[in-house]
Length: 87
Image 1 (cartoon, one colour):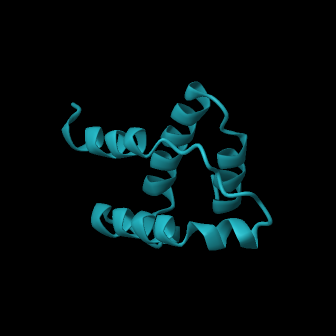
Image 2 (cartoon, one colour):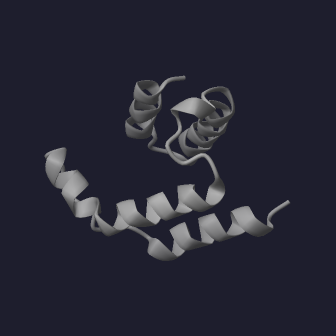
């Protein structure tokens, strides 16, 4: 699945099951299309997410979309943390 297909899947993700499918596809894409990934190791991947979050207002402005106001930051932090410890 290419970059455009993954971006389209992000937009279509509206449920827990859809999110899980997206994560599976993202992992598959990282294995198959590694050369297309700007951030190929976990450290640079996480750093790029942090930089995007810091500048996300600009992303939403450029996309002519409203910035989400109901983001559950604690859940997102837990989601990334459990990736470290869950077997």
